[in-house]
Amino acid sequence: MPHNKIYEDGVHFTTFSCYGRRRLLNTDQAKRIVLGVLGSQLAAQSGRCVGFVIMPNHVHALVWFTRQGQSSEFMKVWKQRSSVLIKQYLLRFLPQYAQTFPADDPVWQRRSYDFNVVTEKKVLEKLEYIHNNPVKAGLVTEPCEWPFSSARFYLQGKSVGLPVGMQ
Image 1 (spheres, rainbow, N blue to C red):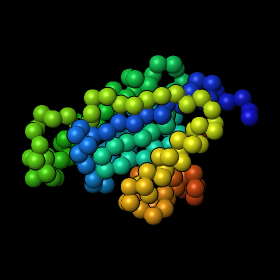
Image 2 (image 1 turned 120 degrees about the vertical axis):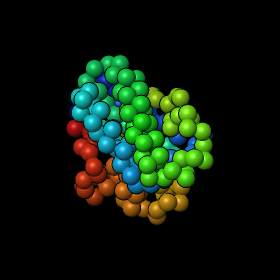
Image 3 (image 1 turned 180 degrees about the vertical axis):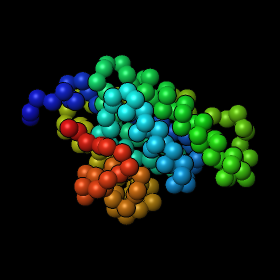
């Protein structure tokens, strides 16, 4: 395997869920908010998205940063900014749904699951796992059918809304 800094420093595999496993990301616009904040924060922090999937009630992402220790700050800002925007969106466009839970409830569960992936084999394993999430959930029959995933980039070479890849 060629020498590759992305594996030396580790790719962060992260998962976080909506509070109470609510389907707060059920609409395409809510998923676009999460994707938009992901892209802007990666750009701001010189990070790279290796892969992602945004599900109706949780998110998986593989991200890499140039400096050690950036992952926790990145996650904090990603969750904070997307939370504010999702709440605004729900209150404005889906007020009846927003009223089904207390206004002071958070959008995201407090904690997220994060670990370093340091081999190409494990990165590919995690990519397959996240790309198959919508299939396992019965939302689509093929990974490329889910528009809020990096599967189309890897399997069809198509754009997925932000730059992704391992190089």
